[in-house]
Image (cartoon, rainbow, N blue to C red; front, side):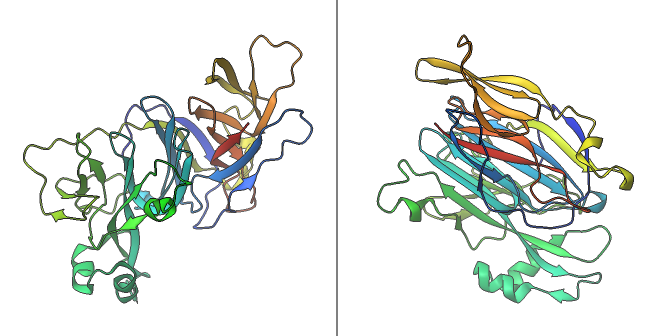
Length: 347
């Protein structure tokens, strides 16, 4: 995924092979009165040799989409993970194994390209086409024709599959869970995804010409997310909406002798404050001494509301979703000592 408006923080962290992080967990806010109930969700549960983190907020800052974009050795393609949360709709979702993701212009839909391995091994000897065909409802010939090299060093191949999520108006309404579940289409496209400016169509980019994680798409097809109608080209009158992500931390391998959080060339003890508002009151998300808190300005002596460990990077308008760098729960050789997470704050 390519990111605009670069604002990188270089983080030297330990390289990590594909692995799984723990499921969402409750943050430890013991010892502070008035602390909110906080759950923690890793942005991705699968890590590569390095990883960039980016996000974008809806125009009213009520919703946020966060992406962790790993890359393999030599910049090879590696599936991303994302987190989406909406304050006004009370809905959140995390998903791994996608090539790209984009919100619709009205933030009512999320389009993504699901990542599948079709051949693995040094010479591509592990053939997964049959399994992928059963799971995607795409015929084997189309899968083979649509696959692309996913490594510059070995003969592995992969494929993209178009998918969408319809953000529910009310997650508690009858049938909302079914309509909000990720919907995959039997369409082998989606290395890059965009929306048309009117939001009626999801544009699906062609497969990469090179085995490079940052490779773009040159041609586009279109999908109607409501009907599933697929067209081999975009309407001539259509224009693609910009996918305006803000580039944040870039995590890259540290030397073997520096595999510890103390070797990070970035201040994990503090970060600039972020202003949020609940009703008529304004608060500040503060990151001091490696702890994220919510403070109400002008209330001397009041105990801060503890969110969790780490430093805050961004937050939605009301502070329900706070993007942060946090010490990783699972540590050790070959693991990232920190990870990008989203704190979901109920208070």
